[in-house]
Image 1: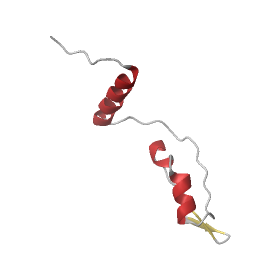
Image 2: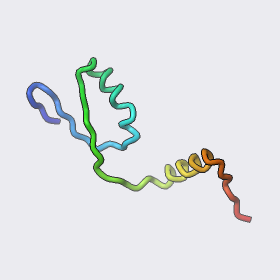
Image 3: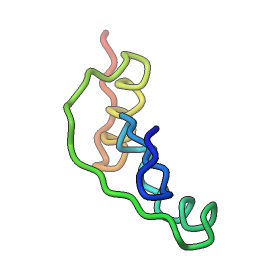
Image 4: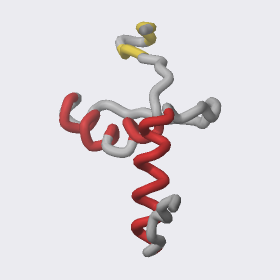
Length: 70
């Protein structure tokens, strides 16, 4: 955290999913005085257990049925 001109500047790396509601949360926390900007930093691997859930959800949304090995 840095202080600049009476303002606190926070720099952090967070997953994009965590940023989806950040604007609303920041407005609520700062009574509308806070602002933020974000930029893409990098892609990262998804943990295997999360990857499986994401793939299953995408297949279900498309109507694909999970094939079972015989």
